[in-house]
Length: 251
Image (cartoon, rainbow, N blue to C red; front, top):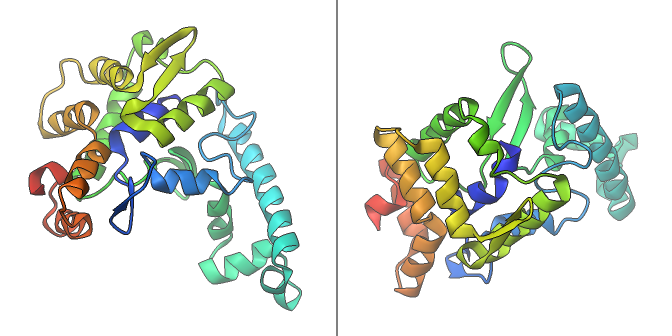
């Protein structure tokens, strides 16, 4: 799933605005996340490709230690209060140590802790879920990924540095961006269509239709057109959530 990050950001981002005003980036929220420096944003160093949960947790802990050091250095008055270290301070305000670890987990796909078997995979696709149906569609997409064949592997980035470069293209440029998959360069919209073709070929039902629509006409593109047309996007997204409708259904 991590390797799908560029296509997921392209097809699911709903944040090309700041308080309803257009920004110059396709995904404003992911840009903010990446700007924080200490976080990797999409994939931890040495964790792609991911071989085990232990590998991921070790990378998470190393990133957490770096974040803790930065917080203690930049704002010790708050993050080292009453003799506590930054992790303890954040855990007190967030309710658990996992609250601190979340500072380092702003990723499109991430492992989480707390499932009945001790772990579960959380799909956190940045600003994707304008309504419950969109969230459910992501779960359906996860099922399709789990049963996909080697054809999907051929469309994924080969290493972490290439993945990061492709994620940056998706975050900043969206439908004007291009990605490198191995030695092949292609426009991001075409790449997203190829991903959709592999994952949703032969699929039917409302979630399959919703996903195909998002890959072919991503919400960020729709939102840009709405804002340029003078429509109140904040009210639109509120309607989506309240009425459990996608942005295409209330535009």
